[in-house]
Amino acid sequence: MNKPILALIAVLGVAVAAGAGYWMGQQRSGGPGVADKTAQAGMRGGAGADKGPGGPTGAVTVQVVTAATAPMPQTITAVGSLRSDESVTVRPEVAGRVVAIGFQEGHPVAKGTTLVKLDPAVNAAEVQQARANLTLAKAKYARAADLQTKGFISGQARDEAENNLKVAEAAVALSEARLAKTEIRAPFSGIIGLRSVSIGDYVKEGQDMVNLESVDPLKVDFRLPEVYLRQVRVGQTLEVSLDALKGRTYEGTVFAINPLVDTAGRAIVIRALVRNADAALRPGMFARVRLLTRDESDALVLPEQALVPQGESQYVFRVVDGKAVFTMVEVGQRREGRVEIIKGVSAGDTIVTAGQLKLRDGMQVTFSATQNTAGNGVPSKGDEPGPGAAKKGDGATSVPPPKS
Image 1 (cartoon, rainbow, N blue to C red):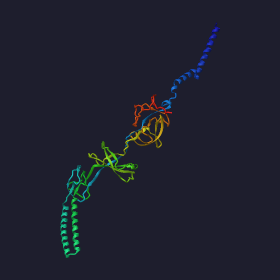
Image 2: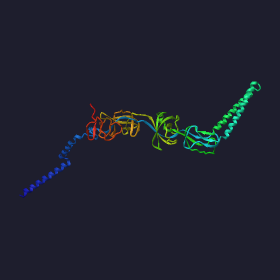
Image 3: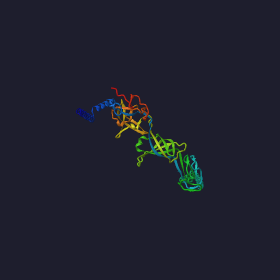
Image 4: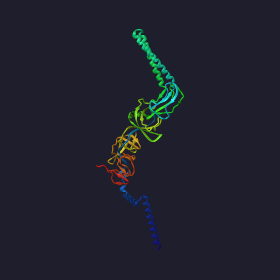
């Protein structure tokens, strides 16, 4: 009986060894069990196998805005300085001693007010002397004229008497003019400055005594590069702000443009008038100028991130019938994250603002579920997708394919 038992054990050992070898071979070659699991997994994922990274049928998910118009006036910024509308340093035309001062420093004065009076004694005496000589000359001329008509003197004697009369008249006018110059009057209304003379001082001709400034209106002088020459004209409005007066602005008007371009900086010098009714501004202050060159009230604007630069040109992606259209545009001014589109886009066009790096001309696109299509030119999160959106799927709103 031992022999049959041994034979059975041998047969079982061979069977076990054969089964183990078969199982190990199946594991190394990916046998039918593994293949079946793979096939089953493939069938389960078959519905989404064709989905690309951006959505169904390989479409790219993007954010868009609707091109719309908005006020975007064209401005040029510069820095300048305030100047008095009229400014003068008061100086005497004749020498003399100061006997009176008719103003208070830093206060307004009216035109014609006597500011400084010099000692008039010498000049007044000269006037009296000239007038006496004039009286004598008139008498001599009257006698000469009477004698000449009677034939007692020649015509030459009469002419000499007439000439002496004219010289005496001129001497009176000269002495009166010198006397008038001893009173120095304000040539215009303004605010008087700080005087440098006192009563009793002897001043010479042309010596500085005090300054007079007219501060309403004020002039503002500023410079612009010569490339803006054709954009600037007389009558344009501007806005002036000052570092010394935070939060306040003053309106002005350009009234003069220097015809000479500064060769040192290739700049044009512009002068404008700014009202200063409250007298808060002062000549010499530093000013920041914002010049309005074009009042564009209905400019077509887009967010700057919609632009795709290539070389020196600018492009955008328009969405037409669910596909991206690569379009060249001409841009204008940029301000606060927005750019003016002069050519290439019309109001109402749908423009891609995010996702351009994945786009190519003619590719199918889908709209992101979190975007703004309101047309204000600034994308924002949380807005509902615009009309024309299809059913939502995988966090995106699909654009219907074009009709055949």
